[in-house]
Length: 304
Ligand SMILES: [Zn+2]
Image 1: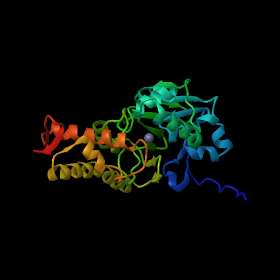
Image 2: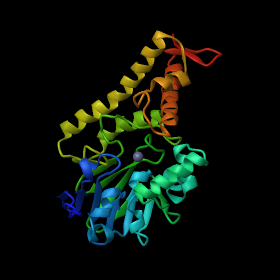
Image 3: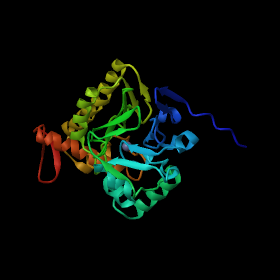
Image 4: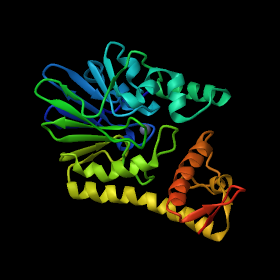
């Protein structure tokens, strides 16, 4: 038995439209932004929902990627003729599978082969060797509307906020303000950069904020700032969790990863362990730098 697909929910703001993925774009889906310039039809990223929009998405001539991850590339296979622009720090990740593996920090091998199959089956994964790089402050004139790039790294090295002018819509991508909190578990991620990005985000001259996942659209600055503060507070929560564990007894990085900082203990994902390790390592490096913890020659961390 088949069901007719429900139409994709959308909100329109001048020449821009936001199409909502399932559950307001909760991962693995995402929210799709389209901009109808008088000269150029542009899209921000291409989440799974882009496969259900139809002719309006399929006419896209220019894809501006806010960053490169599989769930943001899921509609690129529909647009072989479109130009794809990516911040230069994420460019290799979109161009080839090897580049994506390097960015996420996964060795090529059996696990990588499994992941590739999963991405092809669930995200229509197809790299774009033809993609072109852009730099911070790049501007695209689409005709009667334009887009400006604000490089906001941390989630990935090239993560960028894309501002639609004059509408004042900021696509903030995977600074997604979800309850999970910031993700900085890839080889190309940076906790320090993410902290600076979160401080700078309110300065972007926007009055509408669109997240890739779950939250969707904010039209109220007070609510946006409230959720941004809660998102940022997850960093302190994680730091406190580590300090508490080290206060109980000295622990190695492996032992801390066993406890789980981000995911519940026993969370079943073949790559969660590496994400835990990389995330915890970055917090430990900050705490060592601030002399709030020490590390002995056995690799055991303790409170100081
Ligand atoms: Zn992402």
